Image 1 (tube, rainbow, N blue to C red):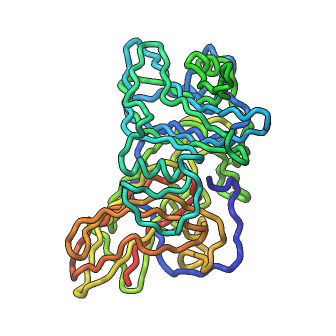
Image 2 (cartoon, rainbow, N blue to C red):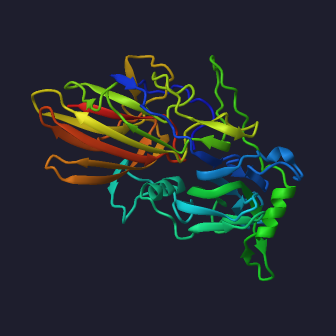
Image 3 (cartoon, helix red, strand yellow):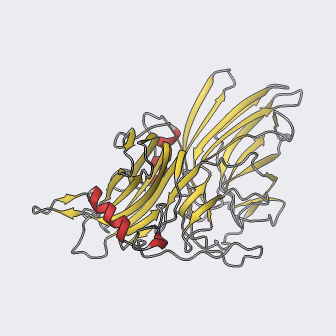
Length: 443
């Protein structure tokens, strides 16, 4: 997860790559996202996020009164650490879905996955650039693995295909443990992203509670009735994360905060072309330009573009925007065009420059030897036609440090006046720190 405080400049001094940095065309869609990421570290069980109406609830301030209908996404990332060595029970996290209407509602699960850090997706050390096959995926951390599944359009077998909810009833979308008993130290995390479509209005809540234990000391998941009681009687889970600083025109220290609420925007789909044109003219030989990815408040890289999803509803002590766009899909088409009368070799890369709001130099800054701070960890899919005319789909897992340039995702030689399309697909991983860029360079 990215730092809550604006990172300060570090040594060694950066190198400058003269170039343009452009805002990304198009915009986020309007699909609402149930975004549960605060508190990130669960200490006290309770309500993580509730969009239920506050009426008849013991603590009305814990309920945001937002109904979902049609397409929406559900994202959650939480960590549990057992502070009492005598109590190593799992922390369960559930997502409760309620039908407030007078007709049965069907919620279809279109795709999604939920993984633990241990044992599903440990944070193993990977090379910075690893091509892989979808049949043999590469990942490091649960966020990386979940995003890889979503890029492939998968629905994890443990998820239901649909929920059929009678009028006035509740159903469990997930009821999953975060186990710690076998771990040293006893800390674990779970990342979840699910794409949903509902035939009618529904309310949702993510809730946390420690496991039940039977007479044989065997853990048992909390029941639906227990979750309903927690929803009605409990307050917000704790401890609360740091309160974010308000968004102003003159920020000093910036605390972004963690997200807990409903964000607006599940994907960004764009054809990246010249203004008022259907092609993207490649740079002149030796030149380069980039487009911002997941740019944010005080991290716009000179583009003037904040891509963070706005919050439709939120708790007062949580992030003002969905900084980082965790789980958001980027679907970019680059219709590359060589306007010259000679062949040109062009590369497409994904990189992590040093974060700036307005550029202090005539281009992006990188470190020749980046500090050991991972800022991006996740998969990217790239589709293109190679120089022999064959269609290719390439998958690459990237691990990038702060201020790190990257080797190309692909290298193409365009004939004179040739146009060739390159498509990039990624889901922004919750283990990452924005912003990044997609870079096009002509050799």
